[in-house]
Length: 92
Image (cartoon, rainbow, N blue to C red; front, side, top):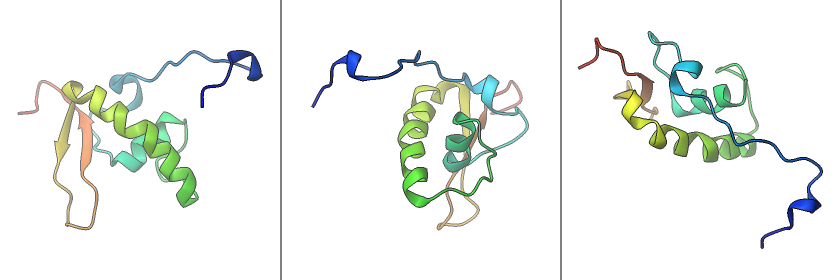
């Protein structure tokens, strides 16, 4: 159910990092690591499963929105996530 804006103590701009601001151009990241980076956390930070689920709710649309600026790599095995990185001129 929608809530009136005046019920909230503070409102913030909905600004997200651009891929080049968030990712190193020579590294590949899982969506879980990207989710942490979007929250200014270390990519290896330990999180409660429920917290990680909420962060993924932000990270997955971010990856989709910025897909034209990213490359993707197959996971090392079927039970691991894929990897995403910045698209550079060197990438096929």
